[in-house]
Length: 143
Image 1 (cartoon, rainbow, N blue to C red):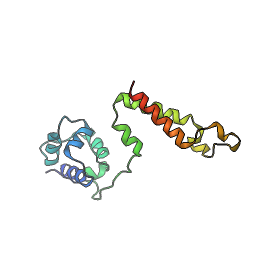
Image 2 (cartoon, rainbow, N blue to C red; image 1 turned 30 degrees about the vertical axis):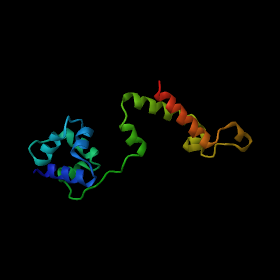
Image 3 (cartoon, one colour; image 1 turned 135 degrees about the vertical axis):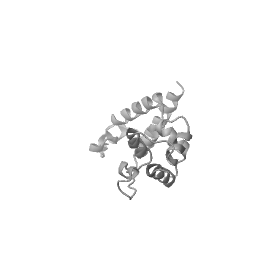
């Protein structure tokens, strides 16, 4: 087993990922390619090392053996994890929904105290807004 193959396997197992899951993340047709890389039967091209590091939430330096300590990358926000699961149509719909949220001032970072008491009745409550958004999403799924 090559050092990089050994490190790929160790990191994959450490984060609880199967060979099938890793193969899917990297665009391989099946897990046999991952198995061959882990055992040293197949080498990986240098350009793929970055993709492996990203998929395995670690650094290129760790996979290449330049340092011995595994340095996990910061986990991406949950929304990005969900976004990556979507096909192109789903990604388009998700982008539209996030854009809609950015048009509601109370959700923007720079104005978290948006609702003015004099105009509080002009706006839906947070639960009403959430319910409306869920209904809109359900309507979009049935297009």
